[in-house]
Amino acid sequence: MPELPEAEVAVRQIRARLAGGRIATIAVGRMDIIREGADSLEWYSGSVVSGVVRYGKSVVLECRKPGGSRYLVAELGMTGLLVFPSVQIRFPQHVHVTLECEGATAASLRYWNPRRFGRLSLLDREGLDRYRARRFGCDPLQVKCEDFCELLRSKRRRLKALLMHQQTIAGIGNIYANEILFRAKLHPNAMASRLTDAAATRLHQVMQSVLEHAIECGGSSVKDFFAPDGTHGQYKQHHLVYRKEGLSCPNHCGSMIRRVQSERSSFYCGKCQTNKR
Image (cartoon, rainbow, N blue to C red; front, side, top):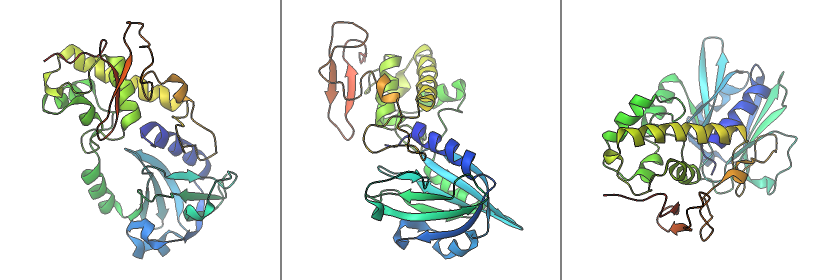
């Protein structure tokens, strides 16, 4: 947490409230929160937020001045949030960066990250291109079905691990990997390269459907996540298997949801999601 839907919700809200606004100042509480580009920090004061986009689970603000653009990349990590000033937050000492804005609907944007698994990167265009190439595979909402199927055929990896491998498919984490595979009726440990064309196509369709529905619901507020405006995501109400171990399968197959503990817990139905070898 947060994953692609939560990051996309943040992007859309920030774009609506900050795009076209001018960054007056950037206040940094601790410099180690900046992974790269700290020496360019002063450049951002006076720049205009010309765009806000998402890559994987990261939120990117494009900032423009006469003569060029730079980018502010916010990794949300496990606990990171981007929050507007109207929202009260616990432990405000963990607000590590604040952008004060002029001419925008929101007067500021705060980066709150108590565990600091995420960082900020301040990059020029070349730096952003390197950052994207190093960290992100295809976007699951944009990848075409035929390209996705070819990707699966080329990977001798277990399906769940592949869905969560950010350098292959960017943005899916444990919650949505579990939900996608259950709906696609595919076992988490099934080998990607062994899927039939029909199964691979079904997985692509389900993947995009689940992610789009989660975005419409504002994401999943499981622990700490809420959107920049303070609203909580409601997709948790639509979780079918995540953290449902011991409950009856929603497909009414007569089986129970199981949990397999590994690096990230897998929740699945052994009857609906068989692993045929």
